[in-house]
Image (tube, rainbow, N blue to C red; front, side, top):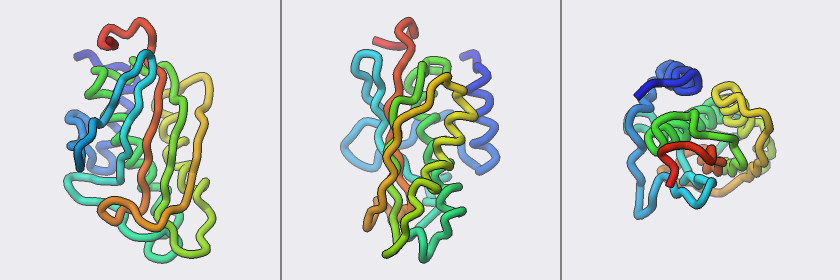
Length: 166
């Protein structure tokens, strides 16, 4: 497989946090990491897991700072990019990011969800360099799987002429 600029950038950023993008994340339940429907790929939620360990645990605003949660959101985004790479062979398959849903485990009174979500949005823009931005929802929740502080799912448009697309 020949790596494009997007792939190389994602691998470089992932290596900086100790994350390997060459193998798809193993689902934590009875679901698929990605489902392709026409030209849209729907990616299941990813938590900030590195090497079998959740890198950011607990509610943001009490046990986790907003800055730490923003870094965790970047890890989630990198894991989503890894799903795309293993699903399509390259990030060059991505036409654009359509939507991000960012879930932040929040302490009572925490209201800076968008700042946390910016970590993922900024990283995706840096790696994918899509011409248009994406829609996004950032919400506070009581709990997340494995006590993760952040979970993100993503919808992307896949290039119509991409060879690995059915």
